[in-house]
Length: 111
Ligand SMILES: [Zn+2]
Image (tube, rainbow, N blue to C red):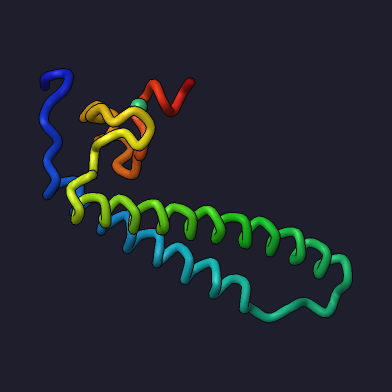
């Protein structure tokens, strides 16, 4: 494997799409958990409230990732995918393979 192989847009599109489906399923699971019945016991209710907060945070993370995926797919469509939004250089292929939603090159991401 070379260090900076050309990115394969088809592979990345497939990856983004499967990640998208995975996240949708995760959100559905979280929503199912959140709509479960509530305990009558006040101590258990406190625990449930705490769990719900965690679930809401997880759902928010998943939704944020879905937005990033949608943005990456639209950059693929308009031909700007893989170009750093900060400095305009091509983002390293290894970085895109590890994190296909990357908008910035490693230098701009870690100033
Ligand atoms: Zn950059």
